[in-house]
Amino acid sequence: MARIAGIDLPRHKTATYALPLIYGIGKHNVDELLEKAGVDPRKKIRDLSETEIAHLREVLDRDFQVEGDLRREVNGNIRRLIEIGSYRGLRHRRGLPTRGQRTRSNARQRKGPAKTVAGKKKAKK
Image 1 (cartoon, rainbow, N blue to C red):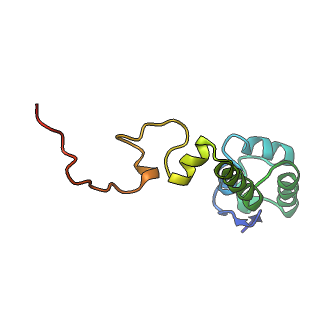
Image 2: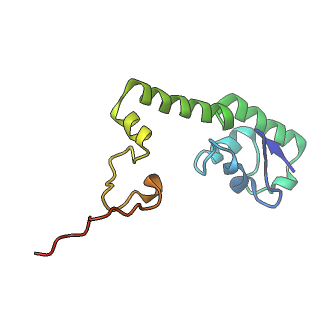
Image 3: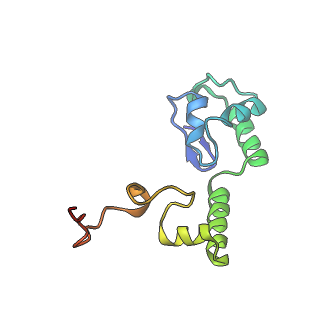
């Protein structure tokens, strides 16, 4: 089992599909990573040699910010927005969507399970 950036990659998957399991590597920049490391994207993780895995680790350390460092930076950015009192920081603090989505009928993912409010039935006309 190949361990890259603190993540055990599944042996049965190809490199193209296994590497996006690393936080900070997505399906769009995995091609760039494999090209820089000189690894065939169709190779399965179990078929990679130690030198290919070492090249992947090297390119990841040099060119990409992944896992703990990236999580720390993202959380730091959110903390900064909250501290300066920006609108986006306020939305983060309240647990609401930050990018302008409607909240009257949607946003259940951010708001959590619906809380029933007494007396909020629509009046008949």
